[in-house]
Length: 358
Picture (cartoon, rainbow, N blue to C red):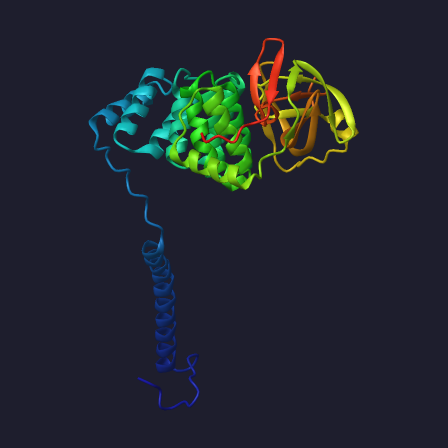
C-alpha cells in the first residue's frame, strides 16, 4: 500500500516507502527481462514467416529411359554413346529445348559425327536463326562446295529477316549444284528472298539457270513471275554475244583489270584494290560470301552498274568487294546468268536470254 505519511516517498526512513521502492525495481527488472526474451522470439517468428521458401526438389523424371541415362551420365558425363542416345530420346519425346541443351553439351565433350547437324536441326526447329546461321557457317567453311549447306544458311537469314544475305547463299547453292535435284532447293526459295531483297530480276535469272542450265522443272510460281517480268521487260540489261575466255579483261566504272571467269563462284567478286580504282562503294554493314578456288570468301556487297567483259556487257550485277582476292576479280554466276551460257571448255559462250516461257 502507498505510504500516507509522505507526499514524496522516503524509503531511507520509512519501511513502507522502502518496500514500495523494492517492488518497483522488481517490476522494472521483470519488464526488461521479458522484453529481452520476447524480442529474439518475435524476430525469429518474423524471419520464419518472411524467409524465402527453399526450392522445391526437382520433379522425378517420368521417363524411365531418360532416368537411367541421367544416372549413367552422372558417372561418365561425356559418354558419347549415352549423350547421343539421350538427344535422340528427347527428340522422340518432342522435348526439343532439352535435346538442344544436351546436344550442345555433347559438342563441348568433343562428340562429332552427326551431332553438329543435330544441333543445327534443333536450332532451326526452335527458330533460333542466329545460332543456326553460326552452325551452318561452320559446315560450309569445312565444305564450301556442298550446295545444301548454303541454302540451309539462307533459311536462317530469312528467319532473321536478312533476305539480301539469303540471296548470296542461294546463288552459291545454285552455283554448287550438279543437277536439278540439288539445285531445286535453292530455286524454290528464290522467290521469297528476292521479294524481300527487291531483286526479282535475280530470281528470274536463277530460275532460267535452274531450268536451262540444270534441267530443272519450274513450279507455277516461277512460271508466273517469269512471265510477268518478261512482259515488263525490266530485266533486259545486256549487250553483245560471244566467247568469254576463262581469263578476260574487264572494265567496271572506268577501271580495267584481269578477271577470272568461274561460274562456280555464286557471286561476282572484285578485289579491294580494284574496287578503289573503280570508285566502288560497298556496304560495310553486311557481309556476303562467295566461293573461289575452293575457299569461301567474305566480302562487302555492291551492285555494279555495268560490267564489260570482252564482247559482252551486263548491268546491275550483284558483287562482293573482297580483301584477300588473289586476282583483280572473278566473274561469277551473278554475271554469267545475265546471259544464256554454254561452257565450251576454253571459256563460256554467252548469248542474250530469250523471252520464251519457262
